[in-house]
Image (tube, rainbow, N blue to C red; front, side, top):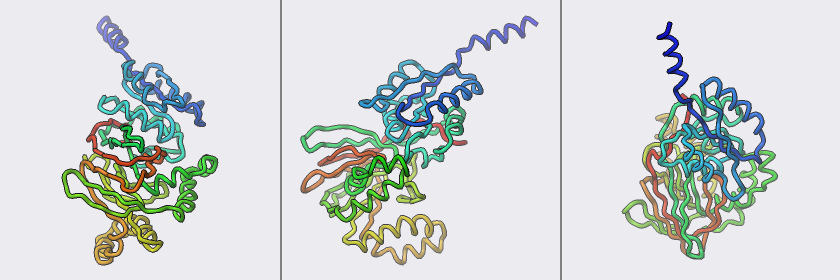
Length: 336
């Protein structure tokens, strides 16, 4: 009898795990989030979570540092891609697991990891009870037109060119109403006015490439909303960056790029016969869209600054950039 009592007392003396919830108070669903977190805490025997709001001038990085200093066992980022990215920047290299509860419109990182984007309860359950997966992070060192240097991280992909112009032109009210479809509207408006630019880029210590491009994308993951498979071979934990160079010469070039990402990548690559067909007909496509892979890429822009974006958010303009992979730097809770 006394042994049983001592065993129970010993169990009770064990400190309970604790999570921190970093959330964007401007997003809808906060009440549902608090209720779901409370239920998960009870099921998983967690102590009450530490709740920290993001701020306009800090979407999550400082809050994640605060959570890490508090010694929590799990950090949950509840918000859009900006919140998740900022929290991840602070957790990079700490080993503290990141749980994600999507409350934004794009939710690119969550979609690529099969994290529920339309069910707060399921996302919270996954954050507490999923498995830990170490994933790569993209580190971007950029130079602004005034010469200032900055460092940012990317979880999905960063781009310089028309993709950034499209994001800059996205109507925020339309984005609230229709989500990622607002990017389609912005793209249709940005494409006619876009102008290609000249750039010199080099992967690792290989030779320099000079090209006239519409955009250069550096990616960690390959899927975009709408089941668009931009980079079919991209892996989040392969220790490499995937670089996509878009260099259409005219409208036909854009049509060939569109055919590549929505037909070849999404459909034909799924079968041996389809891959053979791609090999036989890829001559024109290879002139419009180029895929490369490496651990780092350097990019110099000729003729003036270009717009820059990270994970679907605009980040101003840059004149040069160096992207490198930080392998297995972030631990994320994902489905079993």
